[in-house]
Image (tube, rainbow, N blue to C red; front, side):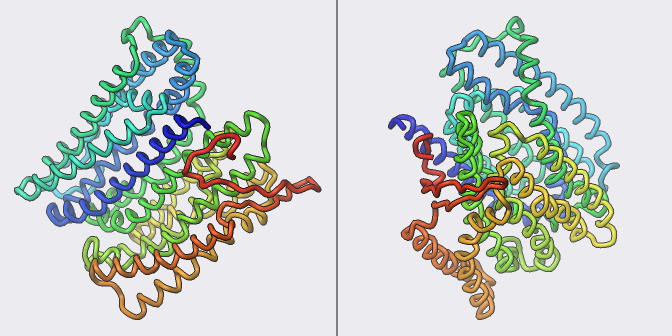
Length: 524
């Protein structure tokens, strides 16, 4: 790999991890500040409204992913005219979607107090919040084209660094206005304005990088067909993600109360951060598997499958164990002791299926890289439907814990039954082989961490940030020592022989480089 390409990869990966770290840090620090300044009910309405607008992501229809693909393709081939047609067609389509989203927003604004249990004193603010949040998302559709173009140009660092700037400025302004006595709508105005300004900044960068003509004459029917064909399966995955991860707050808000939304969110938010960390990592497995599959090297794809899921487990196991053991202390230090009793059970119920699913995070990305994600999309869509139905059924007798169980049960079935067997069918790697090669080492390394945290909590439960930090540091030191041993003994990245189903021979063992450090076909 040329030095320029390595530098580009390091910039992209490094900036993406930096953006994620800052988002998590701001979320952890800012959420309790907002909660205690606004109160349980206002904070619950905040979560509820933004959960509703989160469903607008279904209007994307997979267009963002097609922009990334075809911008990259047309620029690589220097097809300037085709690039202009595709960008303008995407911009036109997104503008139409934005107008539709705005119509939906106006309708929801008029009825939000009837759809959800909003206290009478908060109904006017809830309507304004709905209008502001929905309007921002609607405007964000056409403006979002520029972020897709930057990703297609392999300039992820522009997307990341503008996002970091937006996040830090938003946090600073929110702290300032809350400190000076302003309320919910002022915080909302800052929150919805920053993404719009960020997208405009990305647009300025795009027009400095590319000389793209803009106009209706460049809107092209063939480009639209091309975009629609590629986006069809991705749309199913997007809808499934909304059903799986964004229905819970709506069910709780409509069947219980806005305050219950707050309690549920406190329990699931730390688990969401672990999920986001894995989601950021596994993006790199799409081009890796696509490249190997394109040249017919399925043996490499199998190695990436095993090593990729091992990498996910090396991150997910210690983080999930930490939440299960230290979860009560985390909630107490983060939000306050009064939230522990209600929110910690939700954390436990959600953390287990999330851990089991996202330790297989590489699997779905490899399917996408090979273009074989259709069956996976159907299954996660059905999982999303089951999630919604079960949450509605269980929330009345069991409250927010029942809603969490409605999410956990179908996800467990997908993680334990469907996904490993489906990958066995696609790649020929037996489930037993996957368990041995991908998960035995992470489990062994996580065991001393678990013992350390249990002993520390038994000896002296953490009730302050200082004590929690010391316990996390001790656990991290133990786990880090295990990782160092695995690295020095060449066990961390080595994949042993994989005996394939229906074949008598085994593939050769392979030494993989650190996954996030950049790769080429020769290195992989």
